[in-house]
Amino acid sequence: MKSGKFPPLFPLGGAKNRLSWIFFAITVVVVGLGGLLYINQLNKVAVPDLIGISLDEAVARLGQEHLKPGTVRPMPSEQPPGSVVEQDPAPGTRLPSGSPVNLVLAEKKLDKLVVPDLIASPSTKPLRAWSGNI
Image (tube, rainbow, N blue to C red; front, side, top):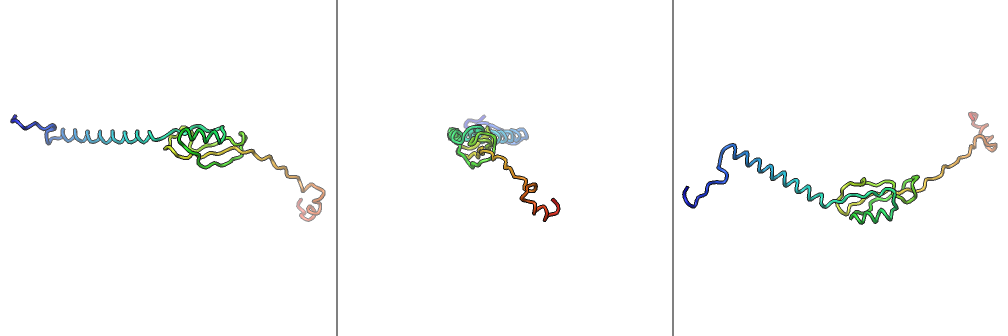
């Protein structure tokens, strides 16, 4: 070997050399994508389970997780009024910090409305005579 010249790290040419470079390139791409996915997950937080607690407690828990309340709407329910009965997204879902979580709060169910039977009432006699079908 002459002084000042070094042998090439990978000799030029040959199928073996080409396959080595292809394998190296694929490995770099896969590792790079994996790193990006991992870094993306670091900026996300898990949605807490808010079912059954009050709106004030739910807002406080969302704040602790760096999330915020989204749309809040009522729904008739047997649960205590003002408690969370549904949430979207579901508990455990990973979201970016600052994302909204929609809440559905229980409201008192309306009592059943009793409608009187007006057909059988004495004051509807003219109605029965007029309709002919009753």
